[in-house]
Image (tube, rainbow, N blue to C red; front, side, top):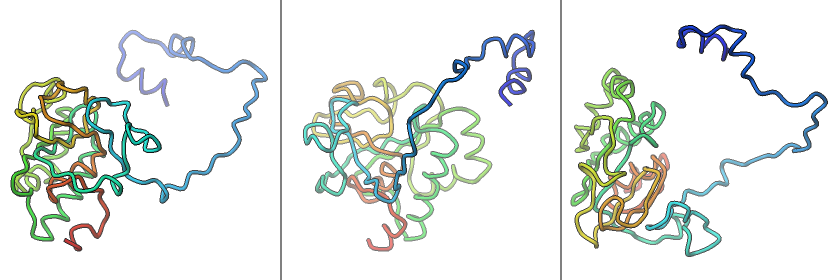
Length: 211
């Protein structure tokens, strides 16, 4: 499958050249990792505290927090998408949460600016074909074309004041990188859910039914 994919996209390559670049284990290699079972239902949504993208270790209270232990953290900006969280499946999540909010009669919370940045033109085209872009705009979400944005302090979604709070699905939150405010890193689902509640909120299917 890898060979076929490359041959379709790389002119001048032969199957022999591709296979010669493959890396294989030594003959007789042994694997002793065993079987690891992960109960996905036991994984709790969390955020990384402002200032350091490595700050995501809930067992250390200086490094991150489970959302359920965070308390009420009101937000000013919800920034979704970007190259990190702007893929096809991420947009499917954004659309799922947005549709649930609209069905509950909600739009983006008062006082919150919500942005979604497409990760690529292909993702933008997919969003438009599926009707997601219209859905987002109807909910009060601002859409941003692919490119470098708030992640590097450029364009919409950058905080302007130190007391502003952002929840974002970008991949870096070094202090000052996306403006002077405080930026929490979170999953795409958390960012979108928070845009409608006005505070950092973990998503679950009955979230808006309870609000």
